Image: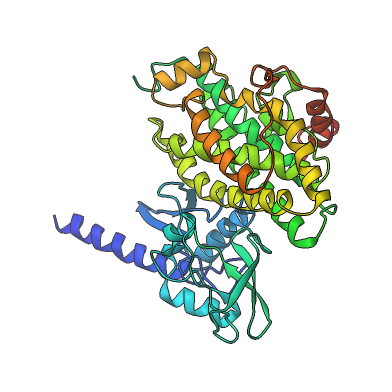
Length: 172
Length: 256
């Protein structure tokens, strides 16, 4: 019993350390966010000496997935986790509602308008208008230039007050 | 019935149909790279192509696993010949001008969204997960293509004329989307697939609403061109494969 509970504590401890490492892995295309901010890191399992990290893609064709996997493994190796594996899960499908509040703030400071708020994804996908605020001047008078932007996860907008074009993190 | 009760061959064929539609249309959109009418438009077409390629990878990987002969997504995409492809004729039609590309995309997106919305209820957990993921992307695709249908249809005399030409040209390939055969029937009966014939009224409704707003005339249903899903393709597919498969054919096993 004592041994079993010590083992469980070990596992929890290891899992917490792995999550700390994941919080340092940046998204290769939006380096101001980590994969934890984005909600792409879904689960950590500890099985003996093996660590399994489950991640989910933002978009099915996201070209950054291979890099993210390599970055996770390399960050874990640096912290002494030599036996690690990354698996991709699809269900439940990723949504911008999983982006952390901290992630939204960092995104705005970086000049990308974040998805409005948790719960907005469904509204956006069902065609209900959501307000996208200009990350530069904060105005809500903005217009969509293109539903698609420089990466799969972004759309292109323009502020009609300060005239600055900006990226908006698409709400899905 | 569960997926173990239906024949492995039928499920493999069914997955090829889904995967090949995404693969071929994704490749067609990729052909716009460096040829788009303006930067934003080109980025949009390539983004849609990228989503479709991502969906292809999931579907063909799944097909390879079901087949169990050791073929992965790459083997299925790059090492099959035209008669082994199971895509609809619509998606292999040439890009033409921007009007042709937009109309082809819209006609397909309207079908794709209805199909994948229902595929989320598949009894096959993998397919249900792929569908739930894809449906979000397809919603964006349809919003884009429907937006351009209206902008160009209800646009200038020139743009409206080109859109109507494209619509008249591509309409004959839409009937195939709703033609079902024994493979469809067995997969639908097993609760895995979606009854495409039943999607026709939903597709009609969606398409008619946009055509009306775009002030375009719906062509008559004068006989559908079919054959793609059973491997009988137009010469267009051969031209696509010549380009798409060149590297793996010329340098087998090449990686980078």
